[in-house]
Amino acid sequence: MTHTSGAVPPWALAVAAMLSVQLGSALSVDLISTVGPAGTAWLRLSMGALVFLALARPPLCEVRRGDVPPLLGLGVATGLVTVAFLAAIERIPLGTAVAIEFLGPLTVAAVRSHNVRALVWPGLALLGVVLLTEPWRGDVNLAGVGFAALAAVGWATYILLTQRIGDRFTGITGLSITIPVAAATAAVVGIPQAAGQLTQGVLLAAAGLALLLPVLPFALEMLALRHMTHTAFGTLMSLEPAFGVLLGLLVLSQEPSTLQLVGMVLVVLAGAGAQRGGRRRRPVAQHPHSELDLIG
Image (cartoon, rainbow, N blue to C red; front, side, top):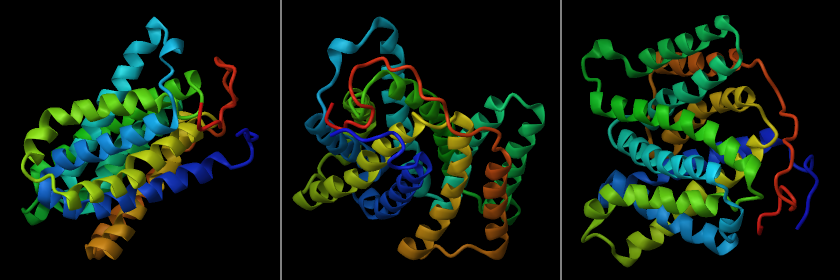
């Protein structure tokens, strides 16, 4: 099916992806308690890989030698960031984990703006994270913060590589390669962690969660990044901590303090302040198919 590139605004695709990510993360908490964060990541990514393989044929004949490193890199980064983030929300509130993870794309936005003054925005976001974690209370879960920081590095890498892969391959065909790689990456720790817990209920829950994350958001983000700069996308992601706090409250009953809400607002403002770009010029087509052809 062919659509015009302007049929759906890229920002709308990105917002829908964010909502799906945070809902999927919030609903994953129960599964994490059963099969662990790595087990949950492996199951979700494996189910997602099956969906992508059913929807799109892996474009192996189109893969060039120079495509192999970014394809493998994106797959490994996706697997690691999924495991790290789920390990973080096992230990710290969802909104706090998202705010820390957001430091990754925010730094991408600031650095790619080619404006030294833009580096103040990651600093402001870091201040917001401090307010969210409230280290002066002495009960900071360092492991949770560390996993969220690792996820931040992975998310920054994911944004850069996703745009490159999205420019090379039509629709979601690139994901039919990278998500199986991500599932294999998560399997290294995930299979031992989930061993003995793979009941029918667990598999059904993982299949449902896979639709919310990674299937829907990864596809939407890849399409959105074809028409947005790294800066614009990273800035729009500033809403992610707010969505994380909201869904953490509604789904997990994680009520933030007033000071933590202030910290979240600072993170969002930092993302908005980092905006120094907009819609990308459409990249030169490197394949003959429609860019929104989801079947490939």
